[in-house]
Image (cartoon, rainbow over all chains, first blue to last red; front, top):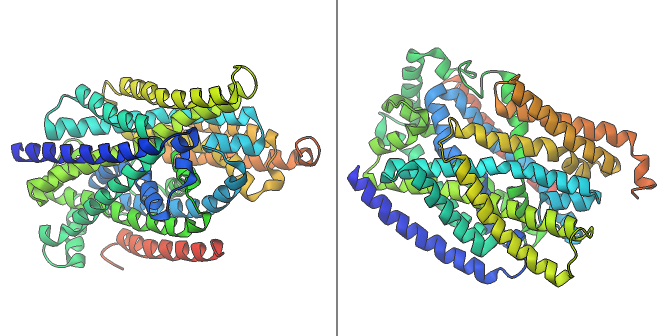
Length: 490
Length: 31
């Protein structure tokens, strides 16, 4: 363990220098609020494809999903399929029109985009407030990072929270989304290497080729409990039934429209490059997700008390110490690359969506255009610090389940925003202001009711119901109020 | 069947998903 600790420290220093340099380059390029939020819509497809993938997959992919595979066996591979089928399709469907419409709209975030599209303060501020739920997502990543620091470096958990919060806040504060996207692309490469390494470890950890080794794993787990090799496992908190699996597919489709991912779509310089960006994302996603097999290998090779520790334990058995240290860094990178994207979105929401486009534009705060722009950039940076402090406080006592924190945010945002987003892209004839407002409220309320009553065990499935309610209300109210489009809302 | 039911679903599901993504990218993003 001492050897791992020394290597982890050395690796961490190199890693911090690297992201420090990238953050510095980003800060040099950040001069306006548009630079801060969507990198001035100036980036290329390969960098953005990698950044999109790194933002999409967080520490939960490496810690949480491998833990599911360790605990509930082969049925956990459904998460691989939902992420490789539904999420890319969501991106394919949404990205093209959203980016194309933004050529004339010039919006900086998802709430901004919706507010501009519907010309509605209620939709803008409502979506902005819903997106603030993602502070739990940030908090969960801080907890995951702190846990790694604790396990691999022996740093007390609370200090670990402060440590990772300070690092992320520092480079987002300076470099905005340039720093976010550059560091994400670097972190994506690390995550790809780790995913592939863990997958191929089957060749030296088990006897025979791929099929023989997987058969050996399958037989061992089946002898322990037949549910571990079944298509659904009643013990699982996610893939316990066919409807729960369908729910997971729906919510993963909606995930592609999460605000921290949506702003990467808006940052693409030439909309014609969207296809290459999506291909880069899908390719890197497959490499990341291969890590889930590590949970299945771990179920045979190691025995842990806490399922979140399974991958780390497996890697210490299957690889030399330097790779364990590398895994620690990769998980930190995964947590940071997701967190920084959400940071950028949250500060854009405060500075642009609420301050600039609502409070200043409606005259609640009197400022000249130049003064307001200046204050907005200042506000976007300082809100990064505020969010960092609040998120740290939330997880100062380690949460029971970081996975639940994450899905509270994602499902809430998707429930409220997907109806108005999809309608504006694909049913413009039904995309009325009234329908968007009703969809926003009803999708969120439906989701919260299911969540609070515990009517559905899986938070992913609960989110999918919220999304479907939001969509249905959007279409029904849109049909009823469509005459407004030609008269009042024109 | 490859190893067990779930791995078979995983294998064909992954291939199928990639084919669907490739086709939809080719059609939807045709310039």
